[in-house]
Amino acid sequence: MGLYLLDYGAGNVQSLANSLSKLGHSFEWISSPADFRKATSLIFPGVGAFETAVENLTKKGLLEPLREYLQSGKPYFGICIGMQVLFQSSAESPNFYGLGIVPTTIDRFDDSDKTVPHIGWNSADLVQTPDVGPAFYYFVHSYCAKYSPTDRPEAASWTYTTTQYGGEIFISSVRKGNVFGTQFHPEKSGAAGLALIDNWLRTPEAERSAGISKSVSLPLPTVSLKSRDNLSKRIIACMDVRSDDDGNLIVTKGDQYDVREKVSSGSSMQVKTGGAVRNLGKPVTLASKYYAAGADEICLLNITSFRHSPLQDQPMLAVVRAAAKYVFVPLTIGGGIKDTVDPDGTKRSALEVASEYFRAGADKVSIGSDAVYAAEKLLASGQNHGDGTSSIATIAHAYGRQAVVVSIDPRRVYVDAITYNGPHKDELVHGSPESILESDRGKSWWYACTVSGGRETRSISVCQLARAVEVLGAGEILVNSIDRDGTGLGFDPDLLRLVKGSVKVPVVASSGAGKKEHFSEVFEQTGVEAALAAGIFHRGEVDIGEVKEHLTHNNIKVRTYVA
Ligand code: 1PR
Image (cartoon, rainbow, N blue to C red):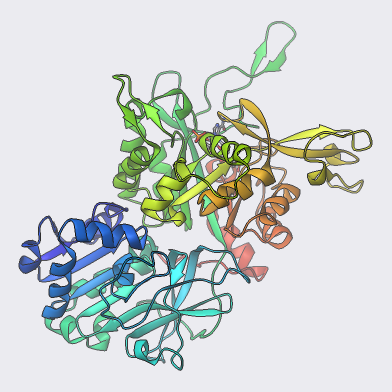
């Protein structure tokens, strides 16, 4: 079979390639317009911004051959932007036109009742075969085709599945004749997504061209949950990666960011830090293990990347490449995403560094220190918009804001609430006298941002940072806490409520998980979209499955994992 993949040069096409290899399908890449004629099946795994996709396809002379291919009746499967490009246009890039095959437009989600982007696992409800219910797939997008058979009857005949997010129902997949397209990412949707791809590819070409319903029926039907927002809370397993003292890349875990073993010092037997770097396992082995255990996302953070240039970071790229072969849920990579200069003097922009990671198989990049500097620059400028040059802005422009996570490393700054007259007075948190943590009782503090893995505290507050990075183009905010990291005391709800109340983008809680109840507490108390943990999983104290069972028991929606 002549299966070809279309890569317009931006976005993580490696994930789809890895899915196909895992499923045992061989394929070629479309490298020139002539390849379209050789293809007997085509998948376009478009990731990124609408404008980037259309512009790149046009520049490479691939847009018109793609249109001809679609008109030829040969099977086509478009993913995300690969589906959106079939539409007339997108509000994301008003000056660019799509192929206009599906006769309606793509619009932005309304963020008045929900966070945007829509990130996470949601159901796809079949329209054309209503007796079959939903399976859960991974979505990550800010723009969608609104479903409205009365206002937009022209798109109705194309609608294969719909999905509800907040009060809006949108078209989550289209299908007609030889054309199939999904807004969600089957290549990142675990077993359900792999089954969908395999199902489509194993159906005879003649049937896929004719669009016979059984050919692309969605797997894993359960019950019909039509017209319900099924977006589930995500559980993320995080691995802090660095070299041990012998130069091997390992997963480590700190206590309040200190990753070295405690050692006894001299005759006083005083316990001090400074021993060997704690070794909790190998990054790829652990990533595969957490995928198999049902993690909704995997996060790999290169925690000492601020010391190195990207060239010396090649081992981390190799880790990402290897992990992406086993992990079919989203993979976020952080550490060192910034403008750098190679030892030979070659300048490498943050966008180039991020692109390397996307090509290796990352789905999102997470920016730490550089986001703090960019936010400080924005605040100093007095403007309410950036100049488009920050790492956040350049990566969001090329790959879409949903691919850019900002990872914050805040630390509490304790003050005397009665006499304090310094900055961020309006953000002071006052520890309740009844707080379960004795250390919080009667105290007051604000949250300062830090850079270089907590080594340097800055004067910018966590709320200032969150608001600024959202303006600059961040699609999600990962909120760590140096005070809670590795303590097992639970997430910091005061910190998370502050950030959640400052932005419209999804917020991920991190640091402090010590038991499964901490996960239900953080979702109930703060409304965050996802919770990340490290130590509790590395040490095998609680299994991801147990966390999800506990959440389900507490009526918190999660993706139930089907191997
Ligand atoms: O500044 O863009 O190079 O990014 C560096 C990245 O590395 C940032 O995302 C920063 O959070 C992370 N980082 C730097 N130093 C450390 C360290 O631990 N010494 N790790 C570090 C941050 C926090 C979480 C951890 C949670 C959950 N670790 O990643 O996984 O706190 O832990 P727990 O569940 O065990 O409590 P840049």
